[in-house]
Length: 113
Length: 112
Image 1 (cartoon, one colour):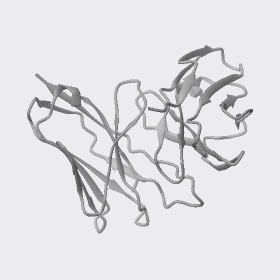
Image 2: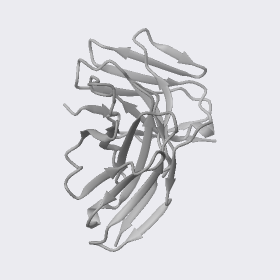
Image 3: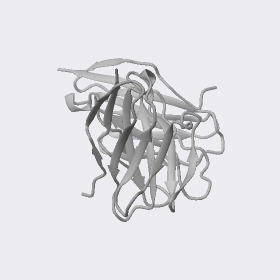
Image 4: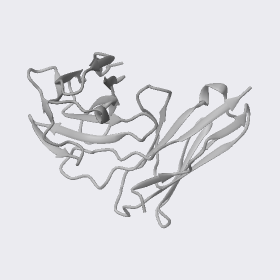
């Protein structure tokens, strides 16, 4: 299994739709989980951290299932500005403070008017 | 909001030439990183740097690559003899321990 694997996409949805992205990870000892957003030719930007109880930030909901090593991101009421590539990020267990990030390949979302 | 600054935004170089990519991390951050992203591919870790030395590096970070923090503000990535396959976006990042990454806007390196 790849370290971090995501839905290949692309996803094309109309404005207002609900869309969900899935991600699986291989290292069962991982403790941190993130969703990043990347616009074309721009740097990755943190969208949200994923907590074990699941967490919500406005229209965005992240879920973690440790037993299945699975993370999801749900976007409700999608906006044109949500069009981007969504990156699942699962750092390996931290050793000594620095934390390298391991990125999935990303899922491209296009929200259409 | 504090930023990580990278220069130049775009660099074109001939194969075999040396390039230096520059970064100014956030001033109170302690960990510094370089990542690269080849067009259409995933973001890949290259190296992390802490307390004036490399703390971890990937298989990609071979002898052609080096990093340096020559003064209190700059953090550089040097590629000694560029190859065509080094063409990519290079992102610098910094973090206070242990999390809280901030990425720079990247340098697009084109090797011709």
